[in-house]
Length: 575
Image (cartoon, rainbow, N blue to C red; front, side, top):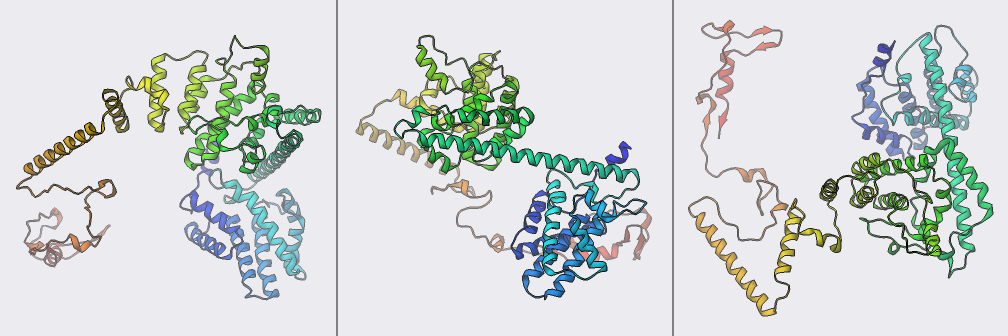
C-alpha cells in the first residue's frame, strides 16, 4: 500500500512553472474579460499536453469562466446563456461526484453534501436535466458559487505543492472511502483554521482600537511620556488574547506579523506621532518609543519562553523571505523587533549606579522583566540564514549576549564575513579603531585603507602644495601612457586615450560599434568549395562496395551513401 500511495503522489503537470500557474489562477478570477480569455487559452494548451487526463476541476473552472466571458460580451440572449450555464453546471456536478459513486450508486445530494457543495446547486442540475429550465439569475448565481467552491477546494490547495491526487486519479472501493474521509477531515481542519484566524484578527484589532482610544484621551503635550496609561477595561481583552495564544500561538504570531500590527502602516505611525526621524538607520533598526509602548501591554502579557522562541523564529523566517522581495519597510520593522527582544533580554544595560526611579523608568519600556534563556545556536543559524543590511547589527547582539560565547577571534571573523556578504557600511567611529587591523577582502576595503593611510600621513596640505602634487601626478600619468604606447608599437593593438566606462560594454564590443551583424564581415575574402577540403569520412565496414551505393534502410532510417555526401559537399562554400 505504501508503494502504491507513493506512486500516486508523482505527477507530471502541464504548466511550465509555478509562475504560470499563479498567473492563470489570477486571470481566471479576474473581472477583466481579456485576462480571463488569456487564462482560457493557457488552459487549452494544458489540455493539449494532458490529453485525456486534465484535472476535472480545471475543466470545470474553464467551462464556467467561459460562460461568464460570453455573458459579459453581450453576444448571446437569455435563453442561450441559460443553456450555456446549464451545461457547465451539469458537467461540474457530474464530474465532481462521479468518482465518489464507487461500485454502488448513491444519491447526488449526499455526495455533494459530503463535499460541502450546496444542495440547491444539485437541484439546479436536476432542473436542467429533467425539468423546466431555471432562470438566468439562478444560473449566474450558481456559476459564481461553484467558482468560489473550486477556488477554495482545488486552486488554493495547489499553491503549496503539486496537484491534489484526489482530483485526477481514479480509485474504487475502500480507497474512495478513505479519500473522502480524508478530504472531509481536511475541510473541517481548514474551516477551524480560518475561524481561528478570524478570531485572532478580531482580538488584535480590538486591542488596537482600545489603545488608540486610550492614546487619544491623553493630553497632547504629555501624550508620549504618559503612554501607555493603565486602563482596567483592557484586562478582559488581554486575558482573551493570552488564552488564544495558549491554544494557537503560531497563528497569533502570523497575524501579528501582518501589515497593520507589528509592522505599522504610514497612517498608524502618523496617528502615534512617529516619523522616520524617530528611528535609527536601516543597519541598526530601532523602534519608535511611542510605537513600542503601543504594543508593550500585549507583549508583556505574552512574554512566556515558548511564545518568545516562536516569535523570534518566525521573525527570522520573515526576514529571510523579505530578502527576495526588497520590502525595506517590512524588513526594517521585522529587524527592529528582533533587536528589541534581544536587547530587552540582555543584562548588558543593568547599571549598578542608577536610582530606583531611573531603573523603574528604564524597565517601563522593556518587554521582559526577568531574563529568558534563548536558544542561542538556533538564533545564530537563523540570523546567518537571513542576510540583510541589519544582519551585522543583529549578529553582534546575539554574539554579545550568548550564555556560552564563542571565542573572540571566531566572533570577529563571523562579523567580518557577515559585513562582506551583506556589504554593510559601519559608522566611522566604529570602524576607525579597527581599520588598521582589519584584513582587506574587497576593492572597496583597499580604497578605504589607502585613503585612510594618506589622510594620516598628509593630514593637511596647502593649496600650492596640493596643486604641485596634482601636477606631479599628471606628469607621472603621461609617462605611463607614453611607455604603454611604446610597447604597443608595431602591434595591431592601440592604446585608448579616451576615458571610457568599459563596464557599460559587453566583452567583445567597443564604443561606437553598430549592432548590425553585417559590420562583422571583413572587406576582402576569397571562397573555396568544401569539397576541396580534406575531410575524413567515417566509413562503415558493411558498406565497402565499389561504385555508387544505394541508400540502406535501418532502424534509424535511411543512411547517406558516399555519392550523396559528395553532392552535399560540392554545394557548400567556405568564406
